[in-house]
Length: 448
Image (cartoon, rainbow, N blue to C red; front, top):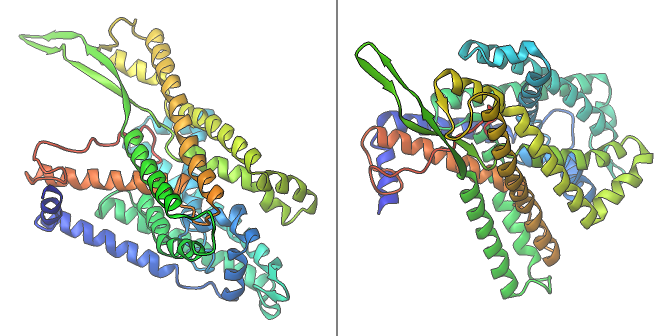
């Protein structure tokens, strides 16, 4: 009853209704764009290549995942939003090594707008580089005697046109994401990636169902086990993504005139998974990089085959890289020294810990411990479903990074809708006016 009433309340609030409809309209435009093909290519050959084992892996497979199949269709949105995400990550990391970027990050709204402007420029630059690389790769791609780019379309005309089209497509998606963030519900970039992944679920399910009759391992018990693993994985993601360690913070009392301020107790929430889905994305990109390079440099094929064909070696390297990137990205996005200094300036302190350096060391110790647990959680979510699916010989892969993004974005969007409903004294999805799903406190600007 509560959930049904919550859905009905969405359409009773005019502003919320407009925001929701605007978001759906923008996502429809995005999905419509994935059906528009880049000029000068043969889609049937590209689809045949992407459905093969060589095309499904590598960096192309990763791009195809986040573009919602747009790369397999060679659409104008083939690069999707990945250049923008990469530019965001680059500028976050530059904030550690470049004082000028770090200064902008601390200047509040004005600094954020300036960094966003630089991020847009970086997105265009990365789109040009990636678009040119894809154009060269498409010219060299063939399935048997059939070529993705026919002979009459090859040359600098095709390369320049492809770069312009793909760059314009990425710029348009970036604009769509910003419009959704400003005038819709949720984080626009996250929702665009979410829509691209979710759009592939029906075809993935259909392909899996077709393989079940010819698979001896797919007994009724095995199907039940796979469904149970999927449900358990989703439940674990929901639990951990909302989990945080609350460090108690006490504020000293201050007397100004005849009034007394402060003295209240608060807490500093430290998310268990501070790094989000960045570690799996980085780890996947690094592992498939040799396969991509092998397309141009034949001597790399040996390294690529060892990494991709040896399941256990691949997964061991994957787990190690996820753990390393989890610690690295957490260190980049969260600075215990700055937190301790801000706490000290506002008269706050952790009970039993001296303000300043000791507080920073304590926060760093707590953050390191929970980050290790969060890294193990990320590795388990990304690897265990893959091992089970590989054992049963099923091609359907909707785990790991994709599942983390889908569940995380869904939770965040529901939180935002609940916020609008409860602010206007309506019941949320939880069924009571006072209850609310705990808002995900992101400790980094990259929201996925």
